[in-house]
Structures are given as C-alpha cells and as structure tokens.
Length: 245
Image (cartoon, rainbow, N blue to C red; front, side):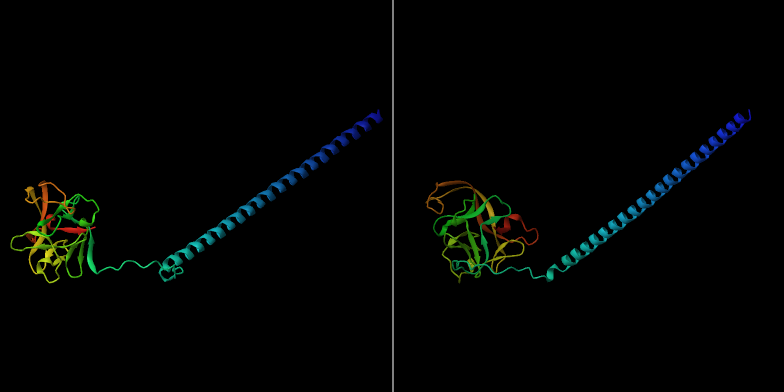
C-alpha cells in the first residue's frame, strides 16, 4: 500500500514537471516570435526611410537639372549658334533697285489682279483681270517711283482727264511718278489723286481692246478699269487701296 502511494506521488510530480517544462518552452518560442516581429518592423521602417531618402535625392537631382536648363534658356541669346559657312552659290542675275514688286491687287477686288492691254497710249488701258501668272500681271514700283509692267512700259495717268494707261517709261514724266503710302494708296506724286478702280460695264472699242498678246474681242463686259480719283483722306475707301503680292 505504501508502494502505490509513493508511485502516485512520483507520477503526479512528473506531470507537474512536464507542464512546467512545456510552459517554459512555449514561453521561449513566444519571446522568439515577438523579437522576430519587432526586428522585422524595424527593418521595414529603416527600408522605408532609405527609400524616402533616395526619392528626395532623385527629386533634388531633377530640380538641379531644371534650374540648369532654365539658366541655359535664359542665356540662349548669348550662345554662338552659328554653324560653319556653307558652299557659295552660283551668282544670280543682276537686278535693279525697287521698293515694291509683284502682282498688284486692289483691296476691293482681292480675287483679281492688275493687268494691261497690248501696246501703249490711250488704248492700252490698265484693268483688273483673273490671275494667270504672266509677265503682263507683274508690276514693279522702282526707286524712281515708276510703276513698271514686266511686259514693258509704265503706268501713266492724266490728272485732268483721270485716265490711266500704259506708256513708254520716262523718268522725267511727272505723270508716271507714284507713291505707295502707309494707307496702301498709290498716289500720283505732287497731287491729291489716287489710283482707283471704277466699274465701267461694257466697253466697245474700235480698234478692238485686246490683251497683251494682241488677241481679244471687240466687246468686253464687266470691265473694271484703273483710273484716277481724288484721294479720300478721311474714309480711305478700299477701291483706292493697293497691295503687292
């Protein structure tokens, strides 16, 4: 009987011992896990902090690059951007001195250009026509104030009759001197007469009014002739305004 009582006491003590050892082991592993989690969080925080520092460094580099580029843009006018000289081209044709050149359009009729009839004299009128890119539609206001047609001759006006026609160019003729003023008007020099466009309707001619090639019908409809008008210095009408193109 005493044997069994001693045995059960030993068994009970052994179970207590196992529970205590097991509890210590579990507590040890719990502490290890807690330490690992804590260290992991610290590493993550350190890594995040390093990434933030890297991002700040990249932003700083970008800001420096922006400031350098801005400085270059501000100083671009001081840079020497010229390249090496190219090959010399072939010499061009000799030219004259002129102040205006090209096709001559009236502002009131922008879809038409100034043209002229064949020959010279009163029958060689100047008028508006559809553009055909020919020499007789090309005009030059030269340095002597002559309004010369590329096909030949200069525009001449009579302040008394208001007629405008083609004539042989004469630098001494006051009736061939024109000034293209700041308002776009072609003013006969030393007068208050402006080159203008007037609608004449149908014109019958004998001999025939012909174009620069000497061809054309005897009857022309819807003719817009060039003529002189007293310059309107207040309203500046469009039929007195001209532009070279």
